[in-house]
Image 1 (spheres, rainbow, N blue to C red):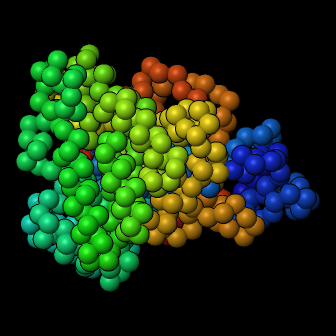
Image 2 (cartoon, rainbow, N blue to C red):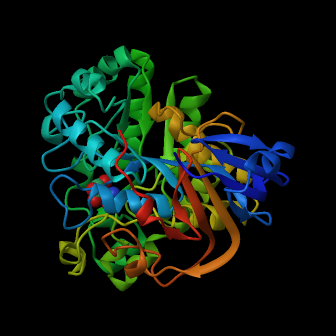
Image 3 (cartoon, rainbow, N blue to C red):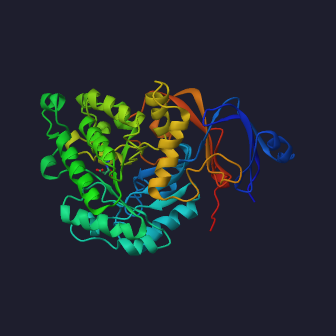
Length: 440
Ligand SMILES: NC(=O)N[C@@H](CC(=O)O)C(=O)O
């Protein structure tokens, strides 16, 4: 039995205010009935206009377990997810061993279930060991208890067009999707940052925009040819937005994601040589930032996904060239979207629910998440105070790693509470450790 929660005067999707009652794992009442049905034992939260959203769903999270538990575990990463307002995350396949068999994806799925912070949907590798040569056991992973629907070699590109074509064809049988890390490997050998004025000045090897755009252009054509679903991971350039816009206008079944860091940060940050800003794909130019914001606002880009990529201090606190690519993002994603897209008038809160919950749940085929806020729906929800401003302190976050590019920055908005099937995982902005139980 979960507790009852009466949320007074909250604003579902930022539209008007009402009372919402959560009981028995579902939204039990909205409006007039909520107060009367609550009884004496409900926990009352005085919302005062706080925004109620469907629980956020991340299509792109690196949880690092198995293999790099020194950087993150399923438990620490999903606790971070809950703190960021997420109720479901997709765990990327670049673990050790790789998530390329039914056994490994089931292990990750079980670890998530036992931790209880958020539903974990493992992503299956497209190729054995992410080596780009032989297709992994896609069907066995789809049929396993983990019910994999998203397949990706993320961290590496499925660069061989024949392998990509076969993968796109194969996953149609179980309504899967290939999530491509678009990076032409030959064009990015030794690359350290975006290729442009700043890389030339710093003397760092460049990662040109065309290396992303060439793969996206090829893959949308392949997806059209075989009539399959394609998802483009962490799109980062103005040219990529144009290609996706063109593909959608042709009716190609493609979706795309942008990360919070590509919505806010630019390659200018590399000037300090601080590897906290080293990421793959790299931070681009202000023109690209404007283009991805516009693409997200007009629906060309479907979702925001974090690409939460925790790394140990040893892997990040070193010279730029030796440092790992990647930055954390689960606990700052919603704030960055608010600041770049809502506070600037480009997205409404209903749009935020779409790009951070409904659409990722649909792309990942995640049941019971990204649902409307309506009576009878599972109580997977997050409550946000958009009026708070807070300074990001990586050492105080739930993620085990401190490689946040937003450390020391003041950001808008804060997650006040998160519920997973009616059980609070976050309350008053703090993780509800005592409430974490093993549920089967
Ligand atoms: N996004 C990143 O910069 N890093 C990712 C993998 C990758 O995409 O390189 C990681 O797993 O660390």
